[in-house]
Length: 100
Image 1 (cartoon, rainbow, N blue to C red):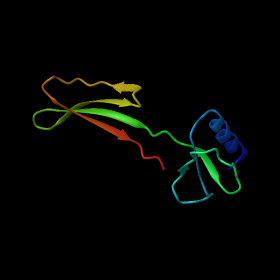
Image 2: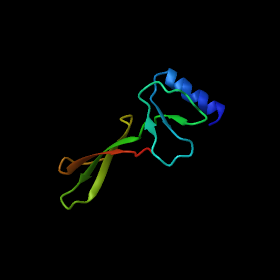
Image 3: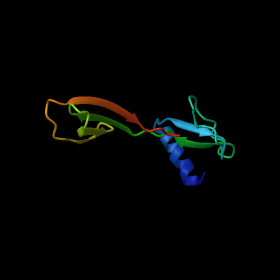
Image 4: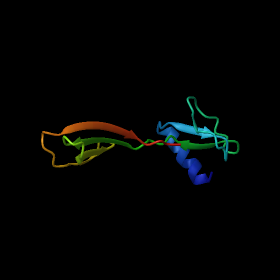
């Protein structure tokens, strides 16, 4: 890790963000640190736990199962609207990004 990366992780920890760690170059998954780290940057690498992207979607289908529109909300902040009548079937879905 560079000094700037170390500073970012330490500042994030100070700000109350969750930190993950693992051995440098390891292919093992990151582990969330539930206690104060000992901060050994020569034996461990650290990162701020990433927040996965979350997408909520409504898919509208007519009687033949054709997709005729959708409404999507990304992290509950941005919405794309569609023109759908009330005679369609709505299916809701939640997609969560896999963060490794």
